[in-house]
Image 1 (tube, rainbow, N blue to C red):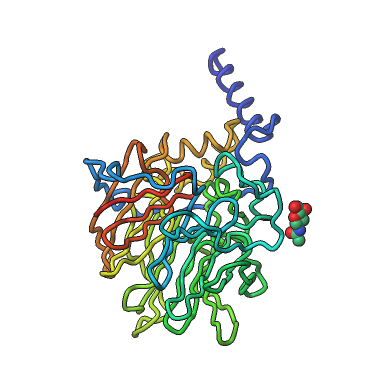
Image 2 (cartoon, rainbow, N blue to C red; image 1 turned 120 degrees about the vertical axis):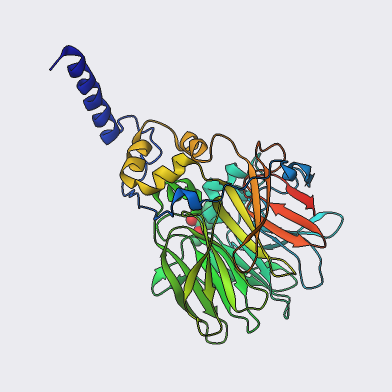
Length: 391
Ligand SMILES: *[C@@H]1O[C@H](CO)[C@@H](O)[C@H](O)[C@H]1NC(C)=O
């Protein structure tokens, strides 16, 4: 062996030992000894949509309520059209009455000064399990009840007058909900909802993203029998969920693979699921508009790097053991900077429209897009405002 070869193999050995042991505990997964990376069965790269909004139309959005709402994830309007209502980082659900934001509801019965205002949505992560964190919100159009997917407290409900929400579901098949994320309601009052993982909680969403853990589930709660059944299991980061306009199916956002799936509720295919569309990135929530099309909030675009990492869990795990903090790994994962991208799909799964802010000048890290009266209300779990885009 030449001297150079010996030096190189020496460096590789030291590097391998370093990665294997992470002696200074700087790696993104050093606090997760059980961390396992799971393969994502990605479609061929050519199937990942390349369509772009070259005009960056999302940059024409207006910023509303700056620093009045921290991390508004989901936007909902009540049956009288009032609102929006939104769940914020301190665990409360706020209501915009047309003039100001009023506290409307909360999910935790154990709120304390730990939940008091903090400078940024990120600062609340540590106490979210105590303060609660409302994600998906939906009103039952008939009763005016608001249903809430709380990331930590499970499926909940609060009456039209607000206040403390009551718990409906905290487990299914004996397995606790660990990261309840989104929901929708059918005419009979059945609730379809997602639990993103039973290993990682929302405050460890980066580790969930890096692992592609496949313990996510889609569940159905029947309010008459109070029973919860599992419709789909072994999902990798199931996130948003929205019923179709005709209620014959719901659309599910699969976070790790970046895909829309259709789950049939009526007709001869009832009870079966099929791929609806491959997305250009990692989806969060999906909402149906009046016409019956679906607005998909996309956290960020998929890069060749994340495509490669999805297919190679062993390499992914090795990269995560490098002494690079989770924040930087996340930044690499999202392609260097927060940006904005949303897309509209037909019920058949055709891409109808794509709107972007590729430099993240105005809109970034979108969590939900709610269309109402010719406007898109754009929430983000990471931002201190709501963006409004005029169609
Ligand atoms: C209630 O909150 C306190 C902190 O304010 C915490 O120590 C305690 O564990 C919480 N209790 C429950 C039941 O979550």
